[in-house]
Image 1 (cartoon, rainbow, N blue to C red):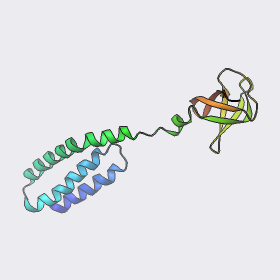
Image 2: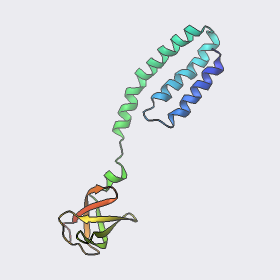
Image 3: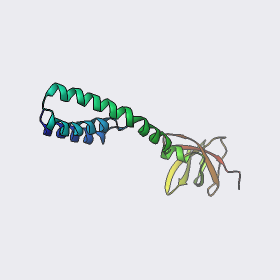
Image 4: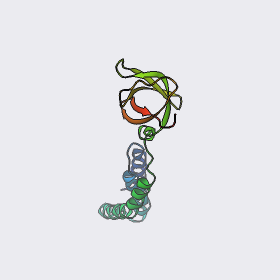
Length: 144
């Protein structure tokens, strides 16, 4: 295969990585780019494919554990997970029997329900304990 075919394959795989997670496709793309250089000196197709396979397996074997550890170590909670346990202010009275109530969290308003069924007046501090869809379930804050 000509060197430019390996370059095209490598670039396409690197672009494809944008739409996937885990960096696996990018590692194979790097292998293809390495093969672009090797193919200049080794024009035999079966040898190129053999070396490509060996380089790909080697790169994945070397870098995937490092990337996996990095991704696990730097895990950031989603917005929804980050909301649980936060103290917010009631902006519309929370009344489960009437199906109404809102809280404000960083400028956004979320429909709210009381965990224990109590009516919670406007202005009270409450703590988000659970989230279902966009509805938050709260209980009154201990610090009143």
